[in-house]
Length: 307
View 1 (cartoon, rainbow, N blue to C red):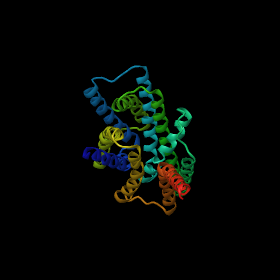
View 2: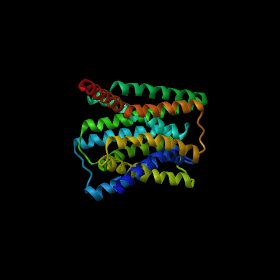
View 3: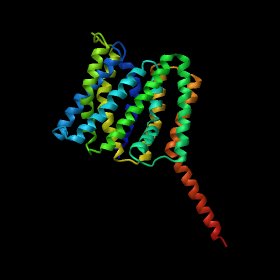
């Protein structure tokens, strides 16, 4: 049991520190070098682990389609989040990514026919959109680039959700590590090409913090965090796992303010509060309503049976 708790805390720690590490990895080099070098490290490590555990990377039609779908989320999602991270606080990145379950449910309804939306969850989405609008409005007051940074991170979230729904729709039944490895390998040429055409020269030297962040993201953010998440997902309830998406935005925001001295305005805090409330309502609002209705029904039955 302690192993499960350790993995759970590990996921929270990695997801909380990833946004700040993304900002630090671009120092002295540029965001394209930061993301490309991270993905190169992650791809090599994931592929080596795949060969060690499974002896080969599966390559049949549905597997190749799965890798392509994963590559769309990895390349598109990472390019936009790294670009947006140049202009907005790292904590806001995690807050916006907290909207992933809501966006995923809409896409799952449209593409997979899953019935996961209720009146309570639609209300939660409206609250979340209001919070996002407040955050966007505040960043627009800072600069146009900051507002575009918010939109870029939101687009990154959407691409990641599209990728996840596509992988589920293909349903190749591949191990998580193999999907990660194949997706990274398929996306890596696009990263390297983009880095080649987007930047004149690669940096001759890197600040220690940037180098450490790239190594950390390549190993922990791209491979270890993914493996720990699926380890936890297989052993805990969905409700327990859902707590991660509530904890990490808050801890990432705190780390950004503490370690990177990021300033958050009052209006942005209102928006952040709305998003956190929307996540709570989305995850547990339906259960609370169901519990209250059940309690009311039991109470009425007792009154009906009373002498």
